[in-house]
Length: 186
Image (cartoon, rainbow, N blue to C red; front, side):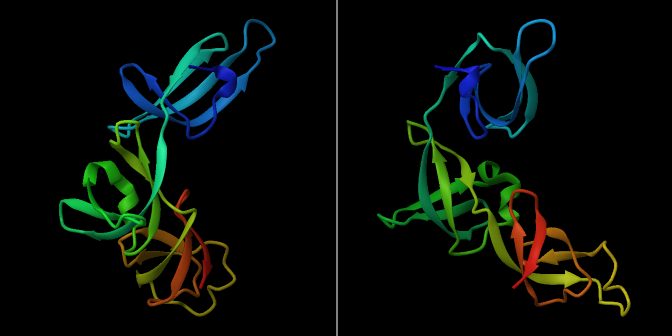
């Protein structure tokens, strides 16, 4: 059990008969009345995000989550196949568990797999940045390079991002996995 003062991003709690990950939280001390904590919670199984407010006196049941390093191998059409780096054991993960993160997965990428105490897979944690190749984008038009905006591009994994005008098909770019934003050309 943890108190509301122990809440942090990434904490997984048992709430309303399910497992929820805390995505955002804010401690609020109004001028009148008791303090409280405003949170955004993501359901581990469904991915649905809900807002909830906890009083500071409430206790929450935290769930211990282990993170194990796994290497992404391939997608077979139904399952994503990962390999344990130490034992070389292969693990098949259903598409529902990966969700929208599949656009960032590149073969031989190392990820952190979140496991509950019963070794059930709760999800994966990507590295902060990934490098992907641009598969499709609008052509570069001379004179657009000074503009602040950018053009739409699609990576080799199908991720749609906005890139600067000088980026062309075949360029490799670094992308922030948290915000899906272009960082730099590699």
